[in-house]
Amino acid sequence: MHTPISEQASQSSILGDVTSKSKFNRAARVRFTNRLFQSYFLFSILALCFVLALVIVFIAKTGFLTFETVSFKEFFLSFNWTPEEEHYGAAAFIVNTIILTGLTLLISVPISIAIAIFNAEIAPAWFRSFIRPVLDLLVGIPSIVYGYLGLTVLIPFLREWTGEGLADGIFAAALVLSLMILPTISRISDDAITAVPKKYREAAYALGSTRLQVILKVIVPAASRGIMTAVILGMTRAIGETMAVVMVIGNTAQLATTLFTPTSVLTSNIVMQISNVEFESTWNYALHMMAFLLLAISMILILIIRFIRAKGGAQA
Amino acid sequence: MSGFTATKRNIRARFMDRTATGLFWGIGLLILLLIFWLLYTIMHKGLPEITPKFLVDLPDEIEAGGGIGPMLFNSFYVLILSLIFSIPIGVGAGIYMAEYAPANKFTEGLRICVEALSSVPSIVFGMLGLAIFAEYFGIGLTILGGSISLAFLNLPMLTRVTEEAIRAVPNDLRNASYALGSTRFQCIRTVVLPVAMNAIVTGVCLVAGRAFGESAVIILTAGLSTSGEMWDFSLFAPGETLAVHLWYVQSEAIVEDARQIADKSAAVLVFVVLLINMVFRIPLWFNNRKLKR
Image (cartoon, rainbow over all chains, first blue to last red; front, side):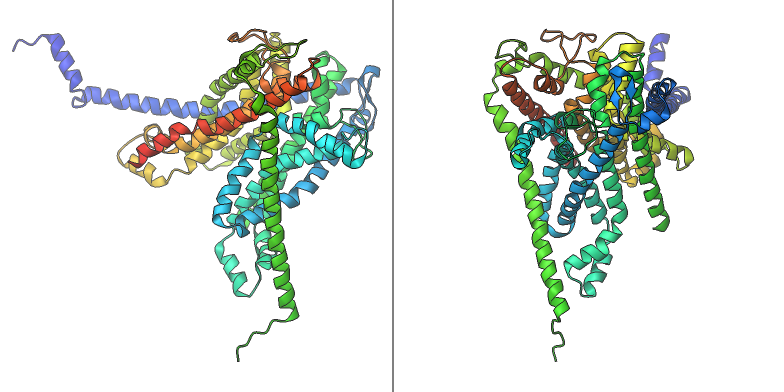
């Protein structure tokens, strides 16, 4: 045989799978990629946690610098927000945020849950497969467009309807927000209601209930945990929403004494002022403290959802 | 004896049931009408007047007739950059949560992290971006800063949609693949991901639509101005996007046709978001057909 050595080598690599040495190579390579990607995936999720830590640490660190010059009492209890004169009372924003969120939920929750019940229990299948994607359309519309519509359509309408000179305020903002969180709440409640086992319904019908009785006495109580989760998720969205609110709320730092008083909430105040202030100033620190409040509220709400879910898991 | 005679209570219950059914139908139809009216209002004020010139022209501060070219370009540019930054990490994290994460306290903690991050208000990401890029690195309001901050916002959503997509893959497929002697990663790459790809792409589209219309983050990190040129790929130029432009035109512009520009911008914005939600799914239909064959 006059086969050159180089050719022999190449032959053996073509038949690589057979020889034990290259088989080992391939297995090692596979094992290596396997391990490599496992650590990459772990790295990704840790990076995510790192971002969260970054957000919390940074906002908290900057926010708590406020209290070097402003007392705890002034920040949380004073309604006087005039940073130009060194008054940093954020109570008005906090109270307004609570009122706005409450009013939004008051409008949105009954309608959203009604939609969810309608979808899951009453609407025929063809209608259901039509209304669900349409609700998803609502999620897709950017928040700034909601704000713009509120400003150009809703506010003129409210002005005519109420006779107020300026209809900006909590009520307009609550209407816009209600529409925005409606798909969130109704979609998740819908899932919760659909997940109620069929035998519950059948048992209730067998006892002679009407559909309304089944819905109110069996299905809604059985799905209540999922509905609570939906409402809280909608709430986090309403509290954190900025651009839609800022366009219709009037942006005046005062307490919302009526539904149509131009006012301001935590998010809208931050976005209106933060670009114009020095980074190293009490004003900026106070704005970060307000962001920290937002952050803290959302975290607490998320923990509440987990608690609700954990309780459900233990019972089931 | 046919035993049943309706008592007063039965009649009332039936009456309530009928009324409630009517009410539920009413609410459902009303909301449906509201949504269509909303879309119609956005579209009919803006869409008919949009010319190709409007879409590529530079904006004008003084005279009427300016366009939205650079903003529209920036919107896509920032969106694509943010997806490039966030998809590898977000999808990777989703794969970890669905495939690798053991059921223990540590995983529980990770899950809380993902949920907490997805509940962080977008304005807070804007503040973080502002502090990192404008203050710490001192590069001012840039496209780079905007897209990285937007990537932060995308991350938890991407992780969630990926995790859900992968969890929906039946375990039989995985077992079959392991039975052939594949490693975990081979199984993910050759079996799980191709099956879940459909749902992942749909999820990414939803995230992209959300990110395209996001304004609170961009306003703080990419600013209220553009470099004033079309097709400016510079990462360090200020990057006002279309959503932010809508805000700017509405609140600060002095140009006389501001209202029309705002109407048209809003229409373009919504149109593109809806398009993103649909167009990116077209390749999936082909993919589906391939899978079925």
